Length: 303
Image: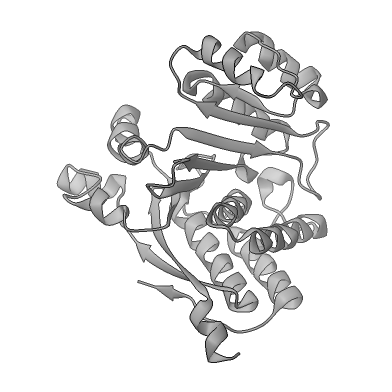
């Protein structure tokens, strides 16, 4: 590759926060797959910086995020997050002192959770999307915004009625927009309808792009399976693809999902999708598919 091409290649700085439980395992898998993808495509570079902000750190120091941590985090282009939560730390502490401690000051008010049935996974339902966007005067604002998009059919429903509709008539839905309280639950239901909560991604976006946005799998830290090597990494792979799209690398995002879907179709899946593969086996299969399709050699750095 010529020096001129190398000079124009975009380099992205990514903060890695695995945090707790299986978050550590799936983020490791996600970075491995992203590294190989960038190696093969040679169209961009990725520089990962690891932050050990976890419940273990909290129990040792009384803090999830050290002094100056947010200022350091703000320097990055995006954040790849694992999962937070520990059986011996109250949920409100881990939520407010790590995840929301990042989302709120970084204005990540748009929480986007796409859901669809991946090829090779089984579900009787079709695509449903879920978003949450915490805004005041919800109904009034929604009605005003709807006027700007006359070609979009808008239907207002109570949350309990929506759960029934999602199960019985998911094909009637393209996108669900709801407040934090309701969408957090509805998006978990949507993920389950698509086959498993282990395949769904989340994007916590600052639409102004003044702060780095954060990308994470929808599942939690799952201490019941931590260390067993059976956590489903697909949600993190899809999360990584969403991150690439946000960074402007749409082609790379598409190619990553092609590899993930091909592996699902091949039957190499974890137990939550009815398979027998381990986390490492699914990761290795995705890596192998990427190399077979797009194999080249470039560079990715981890700090």
